[in-house]
Image (tube, rainbow, N blue to C red):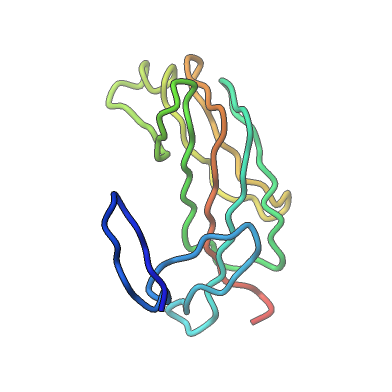
Length: 132
């Protein structure tokens, strides 16, 4: 029996209900077509305005089900991307978003506004495979 301690409170459980993130490829469920759903977490370092393509290291991806990005700004705060604003001028300066996954390059490109930067972050990607 596992336990989780959160804000000083202890929670007991089997641990199976807790999601475990990993930099290795893992099966985390089934997609709607019955195929295994894989997940992988990839770390990235400093990103500045303009953006950067981050290599994912996926093997035989088929359907990209979800891309989730968490990034840390220089003040230490964590943000969930995309960061879009109603005013396109502000978005071009402070926004940040992913262009999606490019299978031919095995990269996720993160576009960042001219006044935005990140010190680090994680891309969490869920997908099915062509081989299943």
